[in-house]
Amino acid sequence: MSTHPDPERLAALATGESPDAELAAHLATCAQCTAELEALRALAGRLSDLESVDWVEPPAMVGDTVLAAARADARAGEAPETQARPALRPRRWLLVAAAAVVGVIVGVLGGRTLWPASVQPAPEVVLAAARLDTLDTGVQQGTATLVETATGIELRVTTSPVSPGSGYVEVWLINTDGVRMVSVGVLSNGTSGVFPVARGLIDAGYLIVDISREGLDDKPQHSGDSVVRGQLSL
Image (cartoon, rainbow, N blue to C red; front, side, top):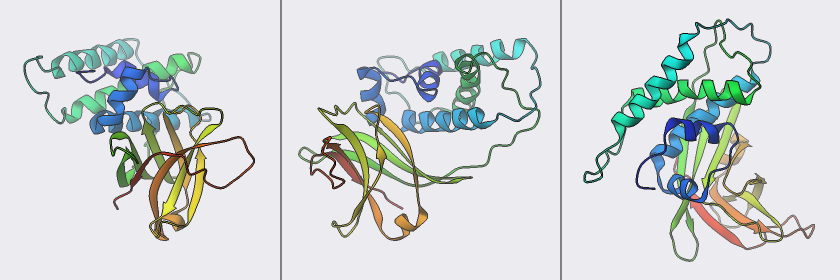
């Protein structure tokens, strides 16, 4: 994929759609798109949690205006094939993309109007990030981000598709002593996941993110079959 995906594709991923091989490979090596996707996932999660908010019907033209602006910014942000694409797109691009995902989420959640009268999402803080490389070749296959939210700390992982083989794919945090480790969850779709992490683990030095293939053998220990690994830089 020579160009960045448009906002609708990222919005679809944020609401649960699995990426195709080309898009997953792009996300594994593009920090910019990964950051945008995580922002959209955060927005999608907050909207899905707003079950008790009194909603206000927006003007009919708002949805069309937002999506039109997102598409216009996407076209304007595309660099000619003969020129290198800028490392960062304008901040407005991310804001419009985040607004555009609201229209997609409305459809995914059954057409419910998601327009709160007064909702101020709590700010998120990126605490650390890491590139996830293969252990044998050192090739980057994904990214991991540690984010502090209003409800706690989350580890957000995105990788190229990982085949579970005959078992499943698991995400671990390994201590910097190289010995102690804890499982933080299963990467159920083999490409991305968000996992709550206790602050005490981070303070105790559990900073190495490891993704492994595990067998259905009732053994809680790490299988030793690590696919990618990387250390979070605080």
